[in-house]
Amino acid sequence: MSAGDVVVVGSLNMDLVVRAPRLPAPGETILGGAFATVPGGKGGNQAVAAARLGARTAMVGRVGDDAFGRALRAGLEADGIDCAAVRDLRGEATGVALIVVDDDGRNGIVVAPGANARLAPDDVPEAVLAGASVVALQLEVPLAVVEATARRARALGRTVVLNPAPARPLPPALLADADLLVPNEIEAGMLTGVAVDSIDRAFDAGARLREQGAHTVLVTLGERGVVLVSAEGARHFPARSVKAVDTTAAGDTFIGGLCAALARGRPLPDAIGFAQAAAAISVTRPGAQPSIPWAREVVATAP
Ligand code: ATP
Image 1 (cartoon, protein in one colour):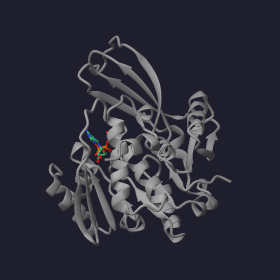
Image 2 (spheres, rainbow, N blue to C red):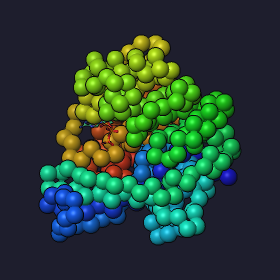
Image 3 (cartoon, rainbow, N blue to C red):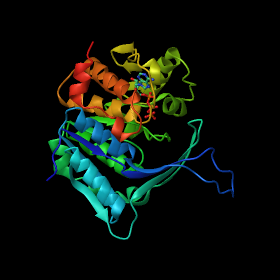
Image 4 (cartoon, rainbow, N blue to C red):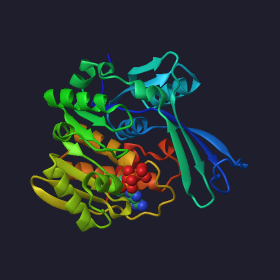
């Protein structure tokens, strides 16, 4: 049976990325440039981050019975991730994201969830949850799976980390089942109605989320760092100062690093510092999963 100190229950996508001089208008065909297939999905990215950043990691998810699914599984296994609970589904396609990136760095993305949308609550084995210390969840798989997994993990006394991405209204019971709620500024804004355009507004959004039933809230603010709002009070953690070249997967690296540090028993402020150091490295490199660092690199940059 799968085992990991960190268990990620979530999405697995193959990102199909093409560069183009500009995004096409409706009905238009344009000639693009280089094309790449890149493993992605918030679930997969967070699992890779947790594993590279030091946690024994297991993934729970679904892929199609196709070449993309096999490639995604092989990639996770190459990072040492236990994939016994990644099932392939006959007759269903692996999730894909079709991404066009223009010369100004803007993108247009369409996600076809495919097998991710077929993940069911019963696909999450009890032994996997029981064997974990931290369970990481996002919102790219059906909400029923997220709700049921959070409830079961909390009943087992596991630490539940919920990344509410992409943003959508959350049932109060799910907020209450998450030990840590980790939105970025856009998601925090959508969940609270507060325009999170400053550190002070992030404190306000965190307080609102706690009023809605969240326990501990971490709002990630890109280069402005992280705001923590908990029963003990509120605190800002500045980000490392680095030269960013590509922020893709910064959030997923932060969450994977946070989960890995919490699974090692690090106190929350230490875990935030470790996760921020890892995320800061990821933004200095291009790409999503290729940019995620290993624990030894983070230790080497410790202040
Ligand atoms: P993405 O969608 O790009 O993966 P996100 O919006 O989910 O990211 P962010 O809040 O942008 O998440 O970033 C998460 C964390 O990564 C931040 O709290 C910060 O610690 C780190 N980070 C992001 N951008 C930078 C940056 N330019 N410089 C240093 N650290 C950064």
